[in-house]
Length: 288
Ligand code: G4P
Image (cartoon, rainbow, N blue to C red; front, side):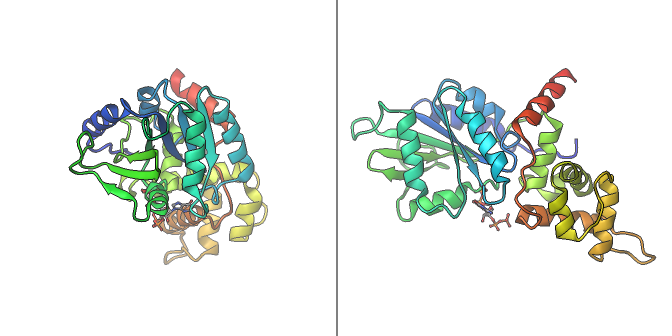
């Protein structure tokens, strides 16, 4: 496994979320549209079992549109679940969220029974960006409100809709190896917690399978189909001047360059997993 995941104050976060879930009507999970399944929290799925769920596939501007469509259909086919594609350019995110939540919990709402929604998501998925864009001056400081923990934010989305934001709850072990690599490639994992070269080689392996035209265009490479990940990384290093004295490729520098390009969307709109691939990875992980 290329990354070490540091769940931090996991027990505290789990306790906070468990407590909050008791009076929550809809659970929103923000996913990274480039890696929806890898960025989904399996612990949250268990804890929120039975509650209506809204999956937001965020950063869809960076993801492959056809793959996002596949993922939206995959989530919408699940019981009690709705899914939306989104990105920071969304004009009226609050309206979109509120409409989806009302549909999921039609008996809640109105001033007597406000609709209470919890939002969760891994670091860097874009949760603060979304919340800031929705809240303007409406973020309620909740430090001294009964029943609301100090670290929680409560955002009033509509007169009868409250959104609770509980600080990050990560899960202890990444079971699917490819999921770990995808999380690392996306930038959800601290630099010191992964081997950038290994993560980049895994990323390139996937891009060689699915995104040869994009890769070739970005780095002006010819005939890369059929090449190995490390050969492509060397070609990129050479093209981009990541070369040490003596003409040897500076692989670390080349790897950083590719990762940054991927994260910034410079290689193109890319999704690192499809539902059927995820199922196969998950099956293999269970067999191990
Ligand atoms: P978080 O609270 O979930 O940890 O994430 P946050 O909102 O801080 O967003 C993390 C980074 O992702 C930010 O970039 C933000 O601008 C970017 N981001 C958020 N939503 C979107 C989106 O829909 N599309 C794209 N393309 N980017 C989005 P940053 O501040 O530049 O940080 P970094 O990229 O240097 O980490």
